[in-house]
Image 1 (cartoon, rainbow, N blue to C red):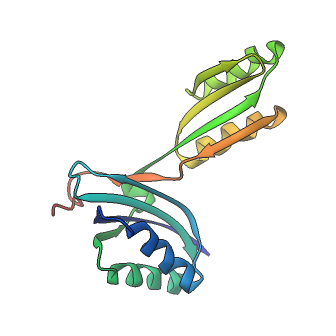
Image 2 (cartoon, helix red, strand yellow):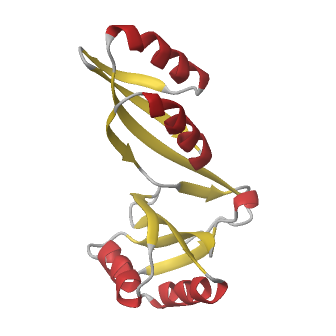
Length: 165
């Protein structure tokens, strides 16, 4: 099983995300993560999908996505030619005694404490998936109350692969 990151440029119309996810579910393909957001041109949305499968399945996914009418461009974001980032918000139970050690971990990972309550902290961390995973591993000794991860957002490096519509 290989993992592949697809970047789609789609029309910013209602139902696009539903049609894309429907394609995956009808064919039994798995979406590991999906992010979507409007581009600099409000007529288009950029969607990043992380999926996995063997080479034949991944090729089939790309061909099926390319057939959808709303999709204007599709490309693979190769790890060595792209920049990936993920955002995670982590609510950690923290007593007064634990806050100092949690704050030290936050500093090491260049994360931020974005909310403080009497019994917990909310931490924001941004980076590649391995950085977020490593941070979560180090928080293993603390009680994580809630976790929200965005999934990967990514862009190709340089200007050679920029799609202009």
